[in-house]
Image 1 (cartoon, rainbow, N blue to C red):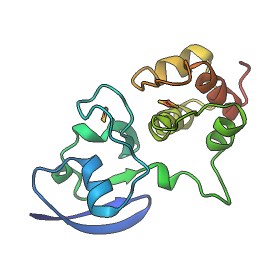
Image 2: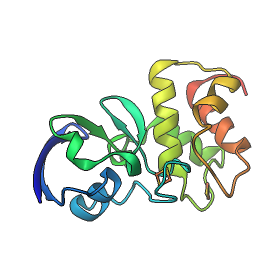
Image 3: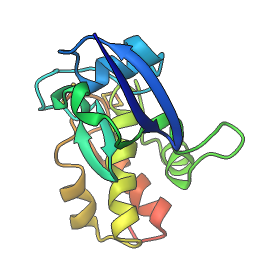
Length: 154
Ligand code: FES
Ligand code: FES
C-alpha cells in the first residue's frame, strides 16, 4: 500500500492505495468518484478519460503511483447541477448522450479540445474524439453538441 497525495479537481487529497492500482480504479474504488467509467480497461474506448496535468489520458493506463504531486481533473470537476459547463448544456440540448456510458469521457476529451481551440472545426472535433467510442449515438449528435458548445457552425 502507498499513500498518494495529489490535486483532484483543484483540491489536495491524500489516499491510501495498493501499489498496482490504476488511476480509474483509484478514483472509483478509493475516492468514490464514480463519474469516470471503466469500459475496456485496455486503452481503446476512452470512457475513462480524465485530465492529468491538463492533458487528456486514459485513466485505465495510468498507474496511480505515478500521479503523486500531480494534477487530475475528472468529470466531477467541470460543472455542477446548478452551474453546468457549456459542454454539458450542449450535450443535453443536442442529444449528445443516450445511455451515457461514454459521456464523461467524451466531455473530458471535448473539454481538452475547447481549452486549446475555442472554436474548432468539425474535423478538429472528430479528430479530438477519435479515441472515444460510443455505442449509441452514431457520433453525429456528439459532434454537433461540441460544435454548439463552442459556438461553431455545425
Ligand atoms: S476503460 Fe480506459 S480506455 Fe477503455
Ligand atoms: S451514449 Fe451510450 S455509449 Fe455513448
